[in-house]
Image 1 (tube, helix red, strand yellow):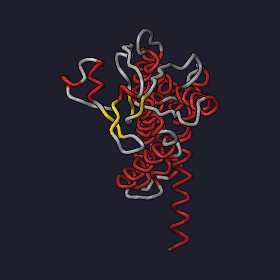
Image 2 (tube, one colour):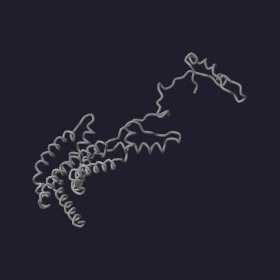
Image 3 (tube, helix red, strand yellow):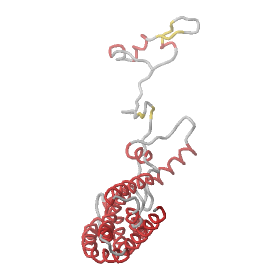
Image 4 (cartoon, one colour):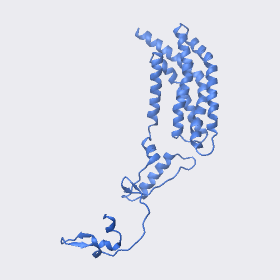
Length: 270
């Protein structure tokens, strides 16, 4: 690469001003090495990390996720590109690739923080488990919903899944909190669990149905950006339906199971 100030590169004849050292040590003008002609070149040269690049933009076909498309692109590049040409992701694709495989860790952290907050609230390490055991029911409903609708497990669905865990935990907390108060007052564990489920059934159903109906416009969204809204809304919509349908039955069962386990452990160590 040769660089020079503007006055010394204005015409092709200026190349006479540039010399290179020959094998005998003498300085040879560039004009002695070949001829020069004017030609055209690209208006701009794209570079990425200082390398010349060719930008490829694309979108996933119907029924395929962006992650699948990226894997196929990498396979094609490995099979057909020469050894001196590589492929690299940038922008959102780079962020997606960087965050690949971290969904499980994020979900684990969500469950951990829910558990720690509930452990502080109930002042017990076992009682929060009765709340956590009901959360997979809502998550199963969300995954079943997007599978039935033919949608993908994308980043938008995963955002909705984190929100769904909080909503499902709220419903379980309403039952567990009321049952715990009854048990602390001396009520039978089974009676307290059933009584709490009956007392909290109406507020749980009312608030949950209000949220489910609020998700309906997102499930039926259309137009620009509708895919992200549908992905979030569909997962939360079906997850909340499963939460209020089966959670109201399972939470009292889990509460009774955990409290009896707690009593047996206490009896064993006393």
